[in-house]
Image 1: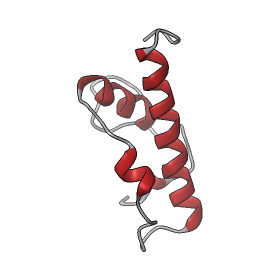
Image 2: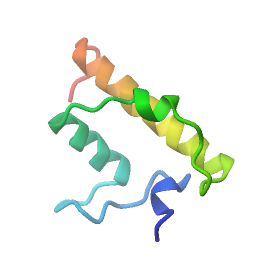
Image 3: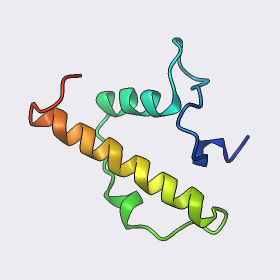
Image 4: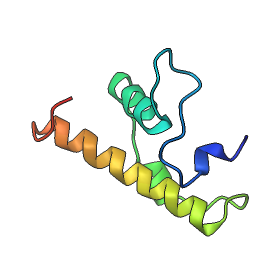
Length: 79
């Protein structure tokens, strides 16, 4: 199960949430409660234990979350 977080499947349910939500939704909720910088992840090299597709999925999700947070900050997206 260790690599499930790096899956390309966007519909994986979070196992840490009290409500039914995907890992992506849970990550977004966590970002709302903590100050998160995406610069470190977006600027790092691909970890050796991930293949290219997994790493691309990680980067894409970081970009999506970063964009969504930015849109909320500027009032372009409702929470």
